[in-house]
Image 1: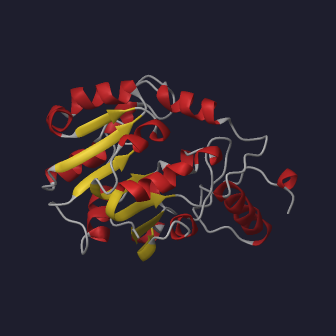
Image 2 (image 1 turned 135 degrees about the vertical axis):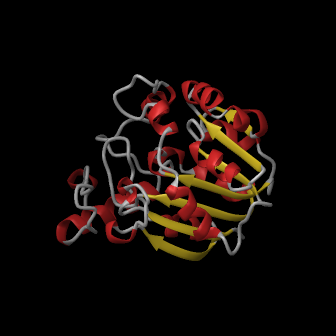
Length: 246
């Protein structure tokens, strides 16, 4: 299928898996982005970074204050999902931690070796205001994933995780995924939408992405509207995957 025929695909209202022609377009978009191809209808990598770097709490979308107040049931679900392999003694890095509600809830669950990377200085300021103990005790790095991950030593944390972040990584920046694998000593955990494409959201099959980098998938779970068990409905259709790194 020609890249000229591809384009944005959204079906978030009903969170149903794509079917028919839509499924073919989703699959083609995934494979295009996984190969690092950037069609003309997507934002540039610079524009994507600038968007996330400049979100403030009074922004119409994706403001740090609203993210800081997000329900935490999805973090409980993640902790249960990775529980047999990952626990409070693990060193955990979140890529794209925003104001820190995910790692703050992990801190409340007893995780003490926490770190995060965040591109947005306003989000980090929100973290210092909303979660001062986290800001004081966690190892937080400001900058883009492309800039910061290469500074981490090999196998320097036990697990690297993302939650609704990797789908914003521009196709030209796909080296980020290899950096995540390099930094992780044992596991990668991702909770991401995999079928949505708009100008700054890029559909990928993260099973393929990380298995191509030598990882082995331990388990997979899809969040369905009927079985979210208290998880925010915004995560319906997201896919959780846990990988063992090579």
